[in-house]
Amino acid sequence: MYLELDRFQGIVPLLLAALVVLASIGVILFLRKRQIERQLTVLREQFADAIESIPEGFVLCDAQDRLLVCNERYRRMYPGIWDLAVPGTPFVEVARAFFQTYSIIGTENREEEALAARMAHHYHPGPPFEHELRDGRRIRITERRTRSGGTVGIHADITDVRKTQERLYHLANHDPLTGLPNRGYGQACLEQTLARARQRNSRFAVLYLDLDRFKLINDTLGHQAGDELLQAVASRLKGHLREKDLLARLGGDEFMVLLEDVDSLCAAAYAERLIDALSPPFQIEGHEVRVATSVGIAHFPDDGSDIETLMRNADAASYYAKSQGTNSYCLYTPDLAAKVFQHL
Image (cartoon, rainbow, N blue to C red; front, side, top):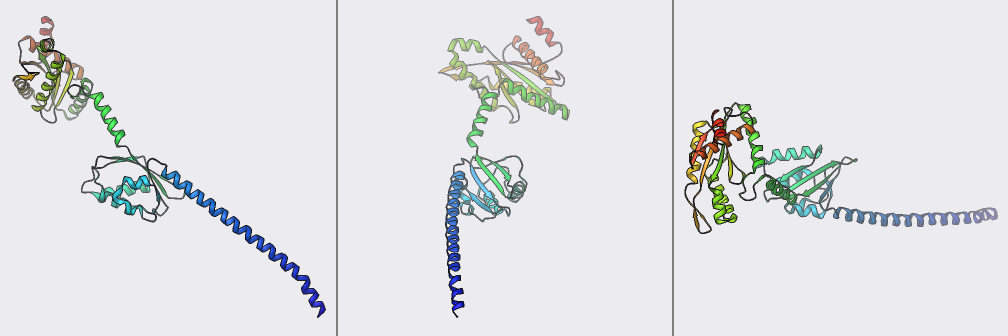
């Protein structure tokens, strides 16, 4: 009896020591857990701050293509699908709601086809692509697959960038006074027309218009009146051409008209129409101003096989028309260049 009591009394300190150790381990684990929770909280806050600081729309999906997280910018870009921009929503539902809510130029009446193409890109991301919305916005979307099999997407509103690019492109290719295509853009269009004509074995005509006595009007009424007259002339000429015809200002008082799929008789009829269009007087700064024009016509392929030759021959024809009197036109002929040279 005493022996067993002695043995029990010898075990008590060991039990107490074990309890102290277990209690210490429990405290350590509890404190470590609290520390990890605080660290996770900090990391979550840092992650949230990071995605909210992204100026573009940010969306992250898991390997099952369910939405994990998106930032406020993404939700504000698409307020019509705000309710679906929550964790757990299948991405296909978000995409379908997007096509149903926002009208995208080029996808009218074929939303399911557009949705299928969108999901194919989502599953196998490629280069960035753009959506042009009916509300005027341009959205560029970049998607990448994550190492865990999910998808991260960046949605950027590039409306202002595209408008700036389009404005710069317009300024580089159009005459600032009349708004017509300038010489460089006109020649580029002529090159394209030439390539199409060769491919289709078709014809086209180049009309070279030169206003008569324009310098006299400039010197008499001033350059501001001359600029106003050029704008009025451009407006009248545009009103007497087909939608597919090109009217360009080459510089000064010279204009070019490009007519596709026309023969000599048709081009001559157009020349007469344009001359008649400019015959009525213009009201410029309280003055009645009349202008006349000389038109030279060159055809592809009869009068040249490249744009330099065609424009040179149309110019020569207009010069010869001017030498014969105002408000006249002239078709280029092989012997006309010699007549112009002799006249010069």
